[in-house]
Amino acid sequence: MTTTRGPVHAAQPDAREDGIRVAVSTVIFSLRRDTGADRARVVLPLVRRTREPYESAWALPGGWLRPDENLDAAASRTLAETTGLAPSFLEQLYAFGDVDRSPSRVVSIVYWALVREEVSSISASTAAAHDDNHDDENVAWFDAITHPPLAFDHDQIVEYALWRLRNKVGYSRIAHGLLPDLFTLADLREVYEAILGRRLDPANFRRQVENSDTLIPTDDYRTGSHRPARLYRYDEAFELAERGPLPH
Amino acid sequence: MTTTRGPVHAAQPDAREDGIRVAVSTVIFSLRRDTGADRARVVLPLVRRTREPYESAWALPGGWLRPDENLDAAASRTLAETTGLAPSFLEQLYAFGDVDRSPSRVVSIVYWALVREEVSSISASTAAAHDDNHDDENVAWFDAITHPPLAFDHDQIVEYALWRLRNKVGYSRIAHGLLPDLFTLADLREVYEAILGRRLDPANFRRQVENSDTLIPTDDYRTGSHRPARLYRYDEAFELAERGPLPH
DNA sequence: ACAAAAGTGTTGTACGTACACCCATGA
DNA sequence: TCATGGGTGTACGTACAACACTTTTGT
Image (cartoon, rainbow over the protein chains, first blue to last red):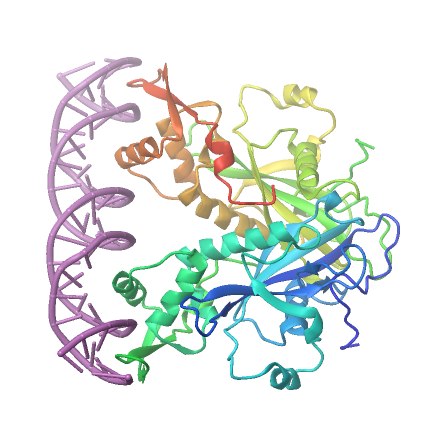
């Protein structure tokens, strides 16, 4: 039961006449720092469809909502099946249910998530040994902006998720969700720059996040090419306070 | 077909085993200015359930999603069936789908809407003559904060919708959606005060909305108890620009 | 004349932006 | 010693809150 997962929108729960089926998909964002490139990029995993409609096209990871699982749980499940990772942030994005968005009637509850930057020293084969069965051949990471055209209305969905990410980074403190536990202010600034697509003043950025009181400075420094930079940790006390009165 | 509407969550599309049914509900906000009261209140319509579960309890207006209608259309339809009015604002709120939120498995796509203040001079019987069959005996308007306990998880939903309303009024210009075409700045301020639950400085409020360039001053004045106040009209050019890259 | 709401002016504070400047390290 | 990023200081403009003040009507 745990391994009988096909690609997106496969394993449909016997489609009957007039039935409206409910799917759950997730836009998963992560960060990629290519060695050599000076800027980080926002990336997302896509899965290749193995059947009609849109066979062989790339699509968002997802699956059918099971009768005994909550929406959040379904999003977490498909996320884990695709990336083998636990999200640092998970939030419902929107419910897409236009009649013509799929040949059959499908209402997709779409989530969006952040996963921390993968440590590049772990090879793909090593990572696969950790978890069970997320078939890497049908999953690939793409640049969040320049990805190929997607199946269904998933292009619009990714566009909307990106808008929400950029928007939320302005008033919330979710950027740390893309970073490991310890990070420098330059790391954090790089995340903001990758998301917003523009350079930020290092001096002003420093004061902004220092005044927000969401970061805890440590006594460790990252030594590198030049003057060592202080390492910070995110204040977990803000995890719960960030969201509004969501139904949880 | 157009009149075979029962109360909320009735007329279910033959509930089979393991089937996940999709409903659409809407939190409809309007404004009530009681004659005599000095402040306006935010009110919302509720419908009384006529069958189990939660028989005779108040609940949000809604109904089952039809196989051939979009989510937005379903929200508009149930809204019209309940109030007989056209909304000045309609937006998806959230998809609620916890397993235990209803005895059977129901995923509710919830919208929230604003309808303009009803002209109190039209009596209920006159208004009923306009539209067809929204049975007024099972629909009643309540204060948005002090309404009675609701069926299902609708208390949480209303709470969340109120949070969204208060939130959105801070950065968007949707408050005019509760007012008629022509209104004074005091009218508009009263809306903000009713939503936010606190008094606002008339002088600062005036400058804020004037600088936003979303209001068009007319040459008409409302004469009343004291110095006449200029009437304003909302600039419709901002209708489309307000929302982000929503899937439309 | 007076009360009360409409409307204008002024001031202080907070915050974001631009940018000059010093500090500490590796090469 | 020099280049480079880490880190501090300062000045300016905008936005908002507080509040004094003038204007215009009905009674």
